[in-house]
Image (cartoon, rainbow, N blue to C red; front, top):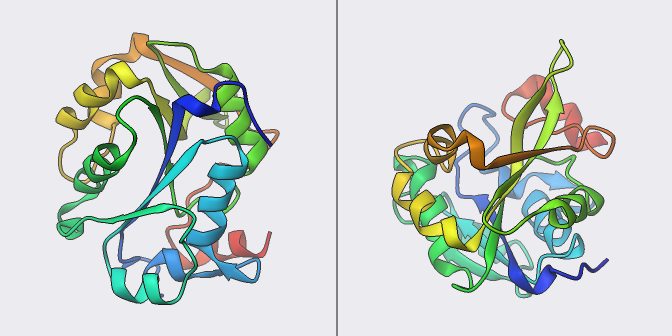
Length: 203
């Protein structure tokens, strides 16, 4: 699957966490569709139209490198992964082609599909932030991942990242820049955080 603007988008897959709440080691290594979660999600970003994919590792990085095939992608490590997502977010942005906008995705969204990634790429407009969104119980769209940060906003977003948040601080400060794209017909958008969500790996 390709997209006319794919040459301008770098996929950044955040996969640095230790998976402490889940209690099964790093989520990146969870078995999924006969491979590992990190391999499937990196391929999803690429197949969805991202020109390049940066995978950010942290916890058990050496073990993940040894037990996965990520040669097709740019793999970087956040040595300070334990301090929160902000460091991984900045590490991914720094490793991406400086001329590209970035699509930020989380390794714990096993339901993400290439068609959802492609929809976001197709909806993105210059100078804007484009985020996947899913309706809550009241039918109101709520912003989730993945999200595209335009090339002109990358540096500001990276500087605003603090602690265990990635782009959240920047997005809250600039709500007028965010375009929501309903992806609920293509994937669930659920994060795999606790044991009662392990069923997401069976889809």
